[in-house]
Amino acid sequence: MAFSISRGIARSFGSLSALRFRASPVVSAHSFQASELSGRIPGNNLPRAECFSFSTGGPAFLGFQRFSTTILTPDSNGGAFPSGLLSSKTVLTPERTIGIYEDLVVPVSNFHNEDHGFMVLAGDVFDVPIRKDIIHRVVRWQLAKRQQGTHSTKTISEVSGTGRKPWRQKGTGRARHGTLRGPQFRGGATMHGPKPRSHAFKVNKKVRRLGLKIALSARAAEGKLLVFEDLEVPTHKTKNIVNYVNQMENAKKFLLVDGGPINEKLKLATQNLHYVNVLPSIGLNVYSILQHDTLVMSRDAVNRIVERMHTPINR
Image 1 (cartoon, rainbow, N blue to C red):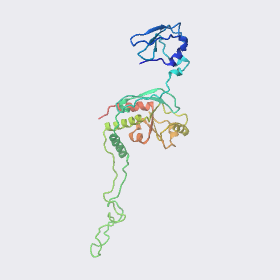
Image 2: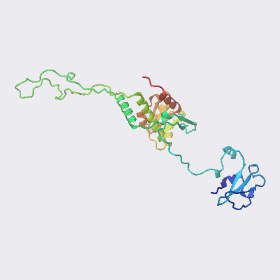
Image 3: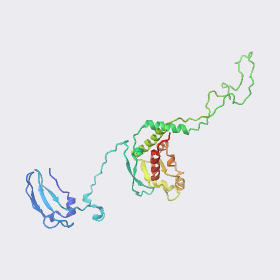
Image 4: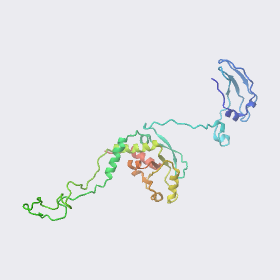
């Protein structure tokens, strides 16, 4: 196997002709010949280096020793790396395994697409195994609990009307009846009809909390969880939100979650947009997350949600 130094690296230290290498014959795998470089390498004022010519049955290669211990930084070359040292290939990252309770690092931005560093998302909140059965139970619990249950029908004692017997018991040839307000008559009572009641049923707190973790983990795994430094907008104009939404691709509905009470400017800017909704962190729920394909949370909201998920459950 033969090795060679990149031409881009060689150009950064000077032309190859300035090194004045002497041609060395191919030697065996267990021997080598050394030739000294004349003078110092131009360009970087590096100390004298040694050049060795090796071969293992193929073309010879050059091994440089004791060049320099200087670390190449963007500031060391006029603000940019040498173009010959940068790769133009796309770096492929392996797919991450979902649901292993691993902390996630996400970039933090804002409505102006400004960089605000990074934030670590707790793995036990934003990287839990996805379970559709838990999501189904929590969503049914939410929809049942929010149902008003004010439906009501009238029984025979509640229907307005006389209690007089409509006709005599015998002799008319008609069926016998004692009232015209029975369920078989028009305008009569409803038997076994609905009455006001609560449709709520019990779901354990651990299951409800797990459902919220699963919903957050699903959005994080899809790349649809965005973290903002804050949800401040310059004015209450709707165009501020519209301009940001137009920059997003493959996003139809947005759910903005802030830590504390919703800013009045943000509330006014989003109230005319049917595809943008705003919630405080205390009101974040599974059904609302599923109704929106993109979840935008402020840094404060993330901290409050994590704190809420880590609070012990009171029994």
